[in-house]
Length: 302
Image 1 (cartoon, rainbow, N blue to C red):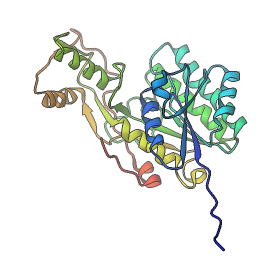
Image 2 (image 1 turned 180 degrees about the vertical axis):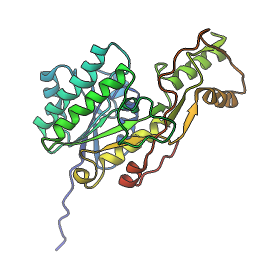
Image 3 (image 1 turned 90 degrees about the vertical axis):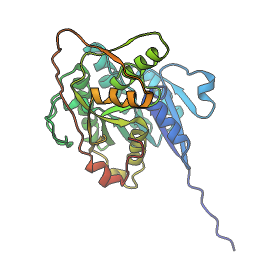
């Protein structure tokens, strides 16, 4: 008699902010995995061309009722919370990053109390911590309203973890990669280089070029998220813990420009303020041994 093989149901993974920079990369990576059904959560419907491979649900994270309906439809086994706001007023940042996260965790654990959740925080929670690699137990000292909102977001996660919820926190450092917006330093430089090459501008305008940042490619970051989410024993190895994701190297802004000049074969004129602005965070560099020890993963692009 032939043994009957039981088919293991696919894991349904909800990705919030699925139309954003990290969320788009996360959805693409999940779509290529066997045994995974990605479901994207967006706050407004995406164009039909963007939805052809994956399923999406629409909800505002600040609307608990709408969010509950979306979660019931998505039926997630796991959630990767990429949605959030990086720029805005303190009130807007708190609403998006703190209240939105609280609403999501309430809705998620009402639908599936056993759901594993990875919440994406930020290295902005550290502020300036010197020029040595920054481990996860470094005291938090955010200098921006964004960083402060992320500290508050992490506190919400800890409150839910204290009730038994399976939640891990990721702290990515500065992201770079295809389709990044000009709201971030690498994207801002690349956007201006494109305009120069198209003869639409003649200079790169920046506030300063002296600070150094730990820069990691978004494709490595989403692979890190997947590795954490896929841990066989998420509850003991990841839940309640924090994981840095970075390259471990600090690159001056001036070096980033020099690398782009090497690629394009052009030399670009810089336009800086006449008065040098104060640099609140002179450098950041990640210490990444916990995620490496937990997942065994290695960067492939950065």
